[in-house]
Image 1 (cartoon, helix red, strand yellow):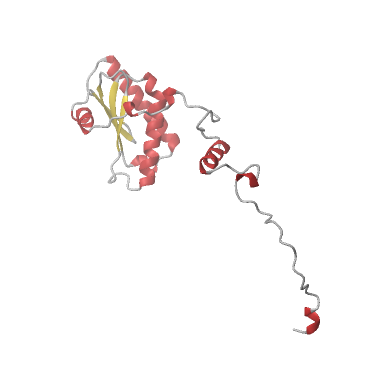
Image 2: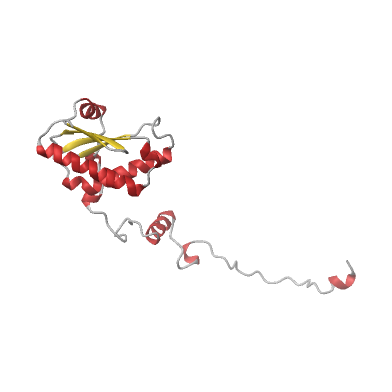
Length: 182
């Protein structure tokens, strides 16, 4: 380094300036006011259901509340050991027994030995629940236990929905028609 290079450096101190970056919510007009607000903004930007009046509100018949689920082992045992109707197809098997609760309920039986991967099990559960939600207004007051066959793991969702629709139609015909086991 030569002495000539150093002559161009200023030795004067500049006055202290304020930091151009201002921390806090007032720093940027579109910045969220905290973690909850940021989450709401992300949800609304994605078109999801927001906390207070998001883009679309779920109607009561589109939810899957606890009262619409089989939760007790005794309920599963009753349906599986003494069904009033049994049916199945290439992807699913179904057992059903009437209940006196005033609405259909759903139970899922998806064992790890049939569907090894958790992601595949979760996908099948979502498909079955969604199909049940869409059809529960047309189903009789009964408890349904849906089991899966190994072929369901490899099937696409577009193939699974018609198979479930077929099961719901069979159950409706058998349970409302009064005939016993298939």
